[in-house]
Length: 412
Image (cartoon, rainbow, N blue to C red; front, top):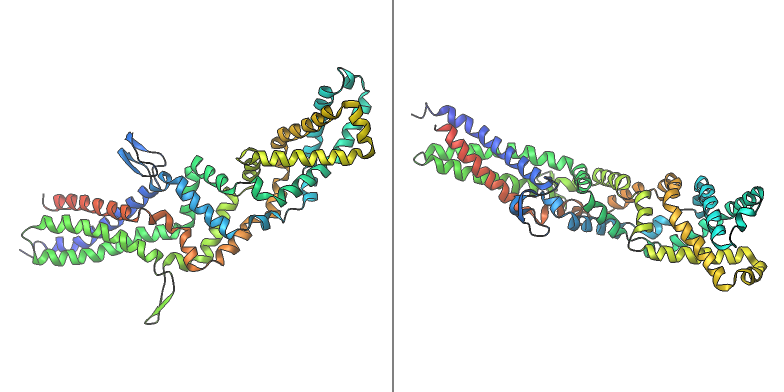
């Protein structure tokens, strides 16, 4: 009788709550993990998580697409020219001091042995060699200062920011996952917990339906599990991002949960990107080895050539006569190439200064906090948006499977 089934009616909301919680948790896990495809990979469409036969997390599967969207937001709101204008070339050169001594010592000796008559450099007394090296060390900061001035003025020609960020994210998918989880941690917790609450409410409805419709209880559990899995995911995702604007309804302020946290999210987003992606190390690697490295090398060669001509002054004619015009140009090109080759090993001396001067965390945080709600919504929503239906269907299928299990357990 009904009294014998009372415990089943009472436990049903809790089981439904468990279904709602479990499907939401699993759907979230499947959004971010596994980082690489797991299964028998016979075929996997580009930028798609599902393949034959296996699964890759939605975010890592779309790493290049997601990173490109993220960097577009960064470049639209962050004025790269304005940020790099904060670097003082003279201060930069001063910070490079410890590296300059080692670098110029190696370069002077190499260039001298290569372009002076055979054995001539080694016949020069050691103290004279050191004096020549010290002279170049004294002049080197001026060269670096002029080079950096050119870099500042032409930063978009020597630094491909989008390529830098996308390459980093694709090479290290876990890095991108960590950033999005840090930014959306409260929303992720909400999705998990809301699954339990919404599942409980649906469970009450499910119990009432079952009370009046007991002939085919499997329909209640199978269909109920499907609906709970579908609805809890759908409602949670909508509550997070909608409405974009703030509405006052019966004294209650209604707005997407993520949008309410704009100040806090901006702070976390800026901190994560400034410390893990937009670092001095990454900038210099991109400038020295990225797709625009030839532009930087050309800029460096011209700066060094111009500087040497100016430094030699009236002696330039005599030097040209001694080396020959072609060989003199070869000397200048060689010096430039040696500096290009040596910079990666010594540029780390400038990192601390660059980090303070660029102050990207503050710049990015302030720009993010000033975004309109519509633009700010694009920070996190793209992670879920393109595959929102997939996430909801995953939740529905998982809910159905749990419903099958639930029915089997309760009516063994």
